[in-house]
Image (cartoon, rainbow, N blue to C red; front, side, top):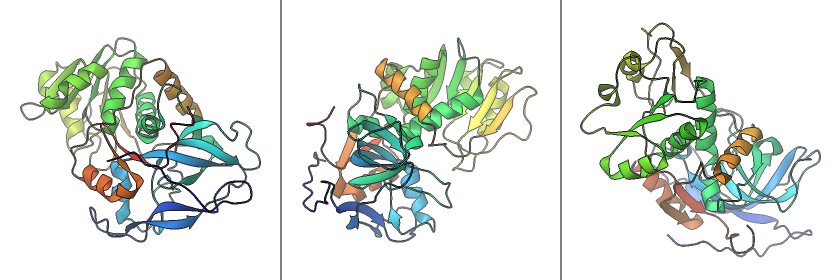
Length: 344
C-alpha cells in the first residue's frame, strides 16, 4: 500500500496520451477468482457528444465491482467510482470544462449493459454523471463516495420520511453504504439513528452520527426497539426476513422500509398497514444534482469519507481480495494517478 505515481510517455497531439493502463476483466469468472483481472495497455477513449474524458486520480472498491465479475458483460475495463480532472469534453457539453476537479459514478446502463471504466488512467462519462468534486475532500476521499453516497441519498429520498426529528434504522453500519447513510440521515435531520456493527466500530459510527449501535453478536436491532417507534428502515444489508423482523418497530402511519437487493432480501408479505415498502433497485448515476447535494454536505462538514485502507493501481487484485474478505470499514481506496500535488 503505497502512493501511486505513473509517468505517461505516449502523448497525442494535444498532450493527451494515446494509450493508457487500465484494469481489464477478460471474461466472466466465479466469485473471488480474479485470474482474469489484468492491467493492460488500452487506447485512451475519446469523448463523443455529451461526454467528458476524465484523467483519473483515484477510484475505490465496491462489493458490486467483484460480484458482477461473474456476469457475461466482459471483456471490458472495470470500476464504478472516479475522482479526477476533466481532460477534454465532447460536443454539447456546457457545464464542465477541462481542468475541473470532478467525481462520478460510471455505472450507467443497468447490469445487462453496464458502462464502467473507472479503473484506468482515463475514463469516459456522460456529462450528466459528473459533478464538481467537493473542495473539502481529496481525490481519494471523493472517489470513495459516488456509488455508495448516491445509493444512500436516493434511497433515503425514496423512503421520504419526515426527516426532522425522525428515528431511522440503518441495518448495517460499518460498510461503505452504512458509514455514509448514517451521516446523511443526520444531515437530513434525523434525531435518532440506530445501526448495528461489531464493537470495534461502535466509536466511529457514533462519531459519524449514530445514536444507538447494537452489537450484532449479542442482539438484533429489533430487540432493542419499541413497537411503533421507527420512521424509516434503510436495510442496506438486505438479508432475508429483515422486513418481517422490522415491521413491529415501524410506525403504522407513514413509515417506510426500503432495502438494497443482492442478498435475497425482500419486502414483507404481511406488512403493517400504513408502512410503505420499497425494493430500491439500482442507483441512478446520471443525477449530477444529487452529486451537487452531496458535495454541499461534504463542504459543510456533514459528510466525510471513511477510507482506512488504500492500494495502488498495480495492487488491484489485493484490493479486491481485501474487499471479498468482508471486513473492510467504509471503503477501500485505489490510487490511479497522482494528482494531489498539482491540483486541489
